[in-house]
Length: 140
Image (cartoon, rainbow, N blue to C red):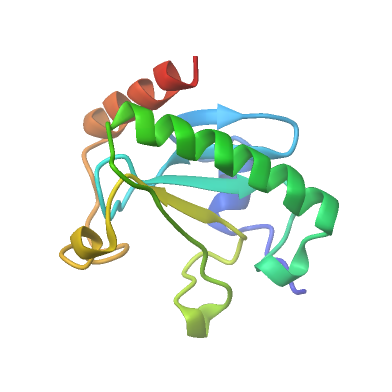
């Protein structure tokens, strides 16, 4: 693993860059994707410096998945979604654009996602803040 501690998610974890935070615990951080593929598109990242799914120890991955499950339930509730799409891209050839392990949580369907490109357009920060507030409220 060749982790770059200057990647955008590492900077977010250190508080050097802002994010619309949804959830945080000792092992993970969840925040709104600034170039969402659907309203409510949330990212869940480990605090552990892993580039891909293959670079994280099993215990850290288990904690990350517990957070991802919790956030996914809140996203589903906040957007009254009939389903959740969860995806993770490992490696540039797979489409990973930020070299820090992350899971995408989207209140959507695969059919709907095909109509909006991944990481194509920046979203208005006020809109993302409203979405983050909805998800935080659903977390309780």
